[in-house]
Image (cartoon, rainbow, N blue to C red; front, side):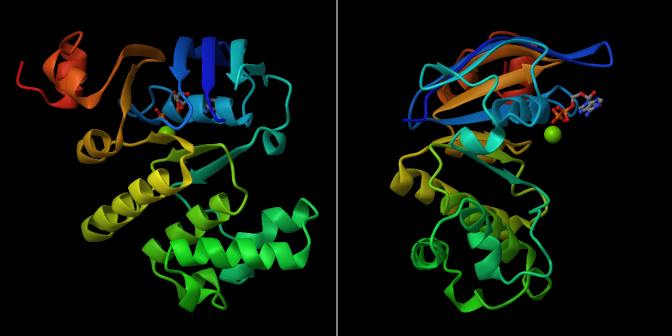
Length: 238
Ligand code: ADP
Ligand code: MG
């Protein structure tokens, strides 16, 4: 579970169209990367999938069911942002468990799920701390942990590593790849970083000015870019 179908997604803000008819198929369990220049609509597309924005027209389907009118919390999706968006007054443990608590899950089950996610992310020593007492990398792991405990079928990551320094980016990228293998969930991930794109993706979607330029595996895009824009973005020699 966790396939996604986008059909002719259009989105305009105050008459300015930022998504100009996006079609995309994501298979269950795939790791899909969105790349494209700043302002091309990557975050808007993720937010539309999550239900945080309504498309102006077009259809979003998860596992074959239309979700256009399904509330964000009911879509089986978790989103991880660049800015972490943790609650400063809550401990790591409570930040990770808050979504479950709001959903009415019993304390015992919350504790078990948080402990399991903390184990996966090596966060056990930090469960009693507050976000201000953590490094950037640890905060981002808490944000990922908060997503995992909800056991979503689809993860959306919006440039999750761009606030981290180079060494931490490598570690966290490897951790996300490991999670993808162990959770077997579908992941859609926006990045500016070519190394992240080439190493994480089953499939890369190259976006430009609200349209899809090309979809393919890293090797397909590298060896057979559809046009100069893709070649320039992926960094192939042609
Ligand atoms: P990216 O993530 O690729 O950098 P975004 O999806 O954030 O691009 O933005 C795409 C375009 O939509 C930009 O021109 C941006 O200014 C505009 N935009 C995004 N969100 C809003 C909004 N809430 N209101 C008006 N314009 C917006
Ligand atoms: Mg963005």
